[in-house]
Length: 228
View 1 (tube, rainbow, N blue to C red):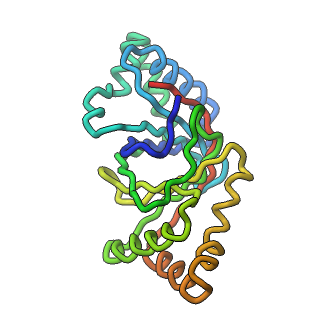
View 2: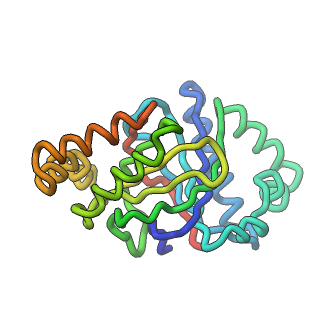
């Protein structure tokens, strides 16, 4: 497994779990993961769950070298039926009953020099995940602000993705093997001010925030993966 955030595209699945059914969900999720591990049509993926954030959610990230790779991806009901037979759809229905809502998006990497830290080998143990809703009229200014940030922060902890298909958002990921590794996220504003000076750096930071309608942040823990 060599998943890094350098993939040009990825399928991003978010499932919000019913809290009262989380124990059942974990057991059924293991059955779903086992099905994908056993199925001959193997897909590379990494899964994360909420440690801290606005909702109890599970995220699945499937890196794509090209959009055409989606043509070979089988649906969940097909995989469950192929591996478990008629019992597969029973397991799938129970799994879906544990899910409050689910969304799937295809994300494309935003190349602004915010390369993040590649994680070769096993996926990072933790992710700091930011879901940003940008005001449509201010998208240009938002991206300009990010380019200004990238110019003085080539070692920024974040990797950025936009939306190719799905709810229009900017998704930012920072990785670490320990939660303490994510502390660099909190230093971004001070690093921007150090690079541009207090007045200019403050204006850049303020301009980015003024472009946003909504911000959601979470800390996620790695819960499983499969190599392609």
